[in-house]
Length: 440
Image 1: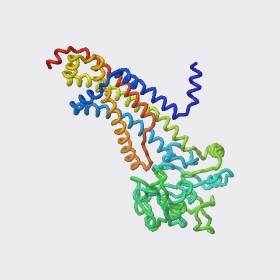
Image 2 (image 1 turned 180 degrees about the vertical axis):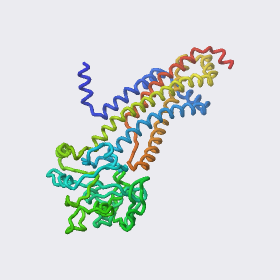
Image 3 (image 1 turned 135 degrees about the vertical axis):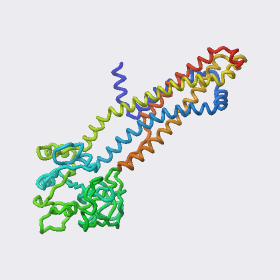
Image 4 (image 1 turned 30 degrees about the horizontal axis):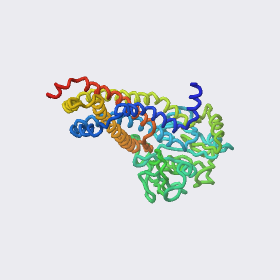
């Protein structure tokens, strides 16, 4: 029987599985409500009590909302961060660099973090570019900047691969032309001179006399390349007093083929093959003593795996926070019932059935939990959205937080657990003597 259920479950679509989990988690709350209120209509009286003590009720609802908002916000933000970093790396099929740390090269070549790395020679680039399975081999030469934005040397083919058709203007066709990223601090028609270095190591004026003119702007990629300024790799070599990658008779030419004898070197090469299997074959072939070939997506997946512990810690913190809040809400509900103990005692003195009084008290608690849960979902989504915008602005990685099934599962479990716990305050009210409560 368990095997049959397992096979049936595995045949269901992921969305159906998530919906069923939500239904199962929310079922205890729904069934409890049906059982407690069966045969009675306590809602009007419960609503009147909530309105009578609306400020105290609002305080408890906000406490619940804060707890749920923290949990929802943490889970949604963590998932959005993983998706954003993965989306930023999806255009980088295979990267080849000098042997070293894959993480360092991932951060340098994909996320444009300043790094001092060795260069690949012209012979190595020629081997890669001339390979029959390689459709694109684009050098990525970084190290300069302008107004805090990285200036990266590459080829026209790399721009087309990264962002497709340009949003404005055209691709560079001259060593003194540049293409701006979507949010780069320069616009088409503008002119600038690159500084040597990035961040705190900037040497202003080191490349004086070599001015670029921006002739185009890329579409948004949702990655740090949106802030980058792309120039011909020949220009990067030239401003550093190096050969431009081409023999003297081809002076002024842009892009491949490059002459190995005049190729000054590049920190990284983006490699793209049309066939998926070819990428794996190239990765194996160019992982050797003098080169390191790696899949940025695979390195990122390993990093996400290492950060899985952080994710679990965040989830545990969210659960612990909700447990503490649930315990606080339970205690608060017991105190809250003291505010309208006289009204409840009067109901009992007038002959109201004990189960009706029980239902009224439970409905008050359930209403606070329901309102707090709805407010918490909205609060968590708003907080995750704000944090996403801040992180996006600081990292140039497009982070978009949204609600998904894990958040709804968390809310459903919290609501069910808290509503079941709300049976205790209702039972405590019935255990109180009527006469002392009537006397106040």
